[in-house]
Length: 143
Image 1 (cartoon, rainbow, N blue to C red):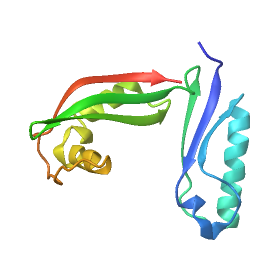
Image 2 (image 1 turned 60 degrees about the vertical axis):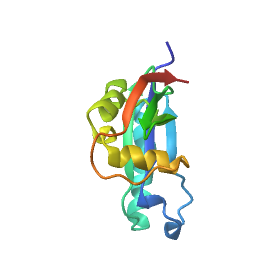
Image 3 (image 1 turned 180 degrees about the vertical axis):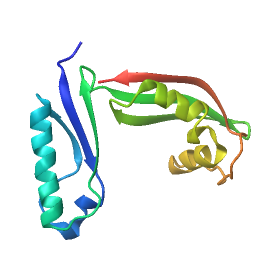
């Protein structure tokens, strides 16, 4: 079991180049909730100072915040098989990754065909449906 840490993941329009505040989006770990809050407060001050819109963030804490949640599977479509994996990032709940592919948005052909096209596969852009089948599905926590 790892060290108990306080994670902050930031992104959004706040980091657009026109704001030029010198901060970078990313994932940061702190030894205490107070340190994490102090960093977030610093970002909020810059957000107001630069009138920078849309500072988006998530916070997690615990002993597994440095583990990434990765889903792996094989998609089948048109008589072909495609290995696929999606990294959900740090501290993403495993049950949420299962949900996304089994019942959520990623269970639909519109998203699955988009994933395969982005990976360079010659697959048409499909509308909503369930013709792209999934097998050998697993979700792992990885360092």
